[in-house]
Image 1 (tube, rainbow, N blue to C red):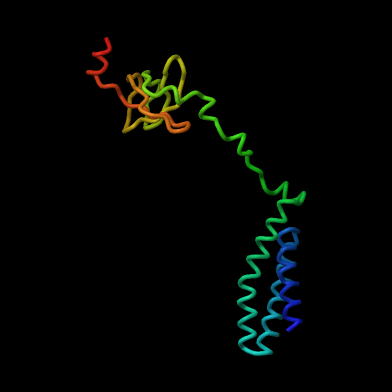
Image 2: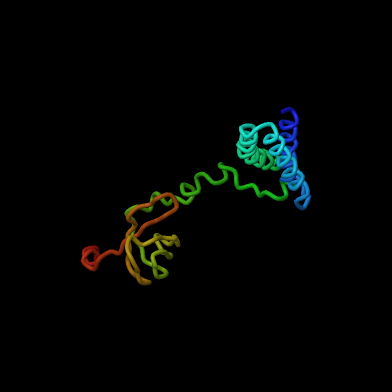
Length: 166
């Protein structure tokens, strides 16, 4: 039984090493060999032990892979392989910086067709916007219906509303 446990531990250590070091599958093959011998030794003791070793392998191998990838992030090779995303403070608050929340209810005109997204001009500013429905042609009068983060939703001002303004 001690031999089985040692073989399983060696197999898991080789799985972690396979993730962290480029061995072109040699370490993975050695790991599979160690685990196969552990299974055979388990069945030599009895069927119940053999199946227990297989169940242990089913849980140990994914755990070893996970551990290998967690450790990989902290190695020089892993830092080159895995890209780091932006920090949360670099991403948060972009919509507030643009002042888009103040545009609600403002009117402007479409600079490009909105299919459903495009560019509108509001107070001499070019704003990326989305139509609330379908296609809006270039040059149409629009009103900002609502702002969701960085998404500005506009609607066409009908002809009767445009006449009421003049």
